[in-house]
Amino acid sequence: MSSRDRILGRVRRALADVPREEPSYEEAVERSYLREHGARGVAETVELLAAHLADYRAIVHRTDAQGLPLLVMRLLAERGSRSVLVPPGLPPEWLAADGPTRIHDRAASTPYELDAVGSVVTGCAVAIAETGTIVLDGGPAQGRRRITLVPDHHICVVRVPDQVVSSVPQALERLDPVRPLTWISGPSATSDIELDRVEGVHGPRTLEVVLVTGGPGRAPLA
Image (cartoon, rainbow, N blue to C red; front, side, top):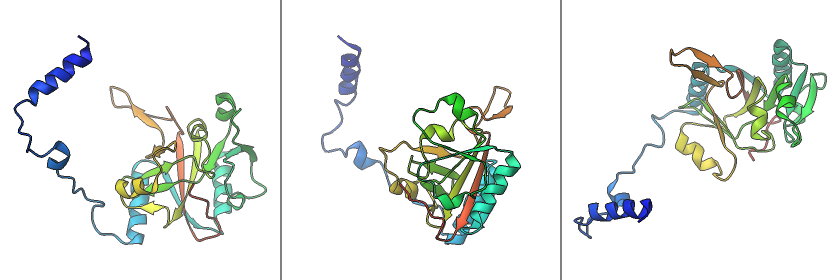
C-alpha cells in the first residue's frame, strides 16, 4: 500500500460518519470578505499608497507627465548611474535624451552584465494602497522579471490614479494569473536571527517610486 493510499484511507474513515446532507466545505465556510477596508476617495487612496511605500523604505516622488523625464534624469544623476536598463516598451519620453547610456533588455544578457548596470527604470501593472505593494507582470514597460531583481537601483513609475487600487482583491481582478507576477513591497530586505535588517539580498537595495499624473507619459498595462 502506497503512502497516498494510506492518506486517502484515513480521510475516508474520518468522513465516514458525516451525513450526506451536510453542506460541503465550500458551502459551509463564509466567503464574504471585504473588498477594501474603509471608504476612500481617489486622493486618499493615493496618499495611503505613498504612506505605505514610505513605511517599507521605498523613496516616493511625485510629478506630472511633463516633469517625469527631468525627475528621472535627476534621480539617475544623484545615484551616479552611468547606464540605465530599459524594457522594450518603456515610453521614450520617460527618459531625457541626454541621460545615461541606455542598456536594452535582452534575453542574452548575463547576470553579471545586469549587475553592472547602474539603474533600471520600469512601469508597473498595478499599485496596491493598503499594502504599499507594486506589482509587475512582465508587460512591455516592465520587461523581464530579472531586470528588476539584479540591478541595485530600481525606479518604478506608477500612473496616478489609473494604476492605483485600494486592495489586493481589486488588484487581482486586473492581473492575469498566467503572467510572471512580481509583488514588491519596498526594497529587497531580510533579517537574521538577531533581527539585523540587510537590504539588497534578493533584489534592488534601493526602490524609488514615481507617482506621475497626466496623460502623455502613460505606458501600456500589458
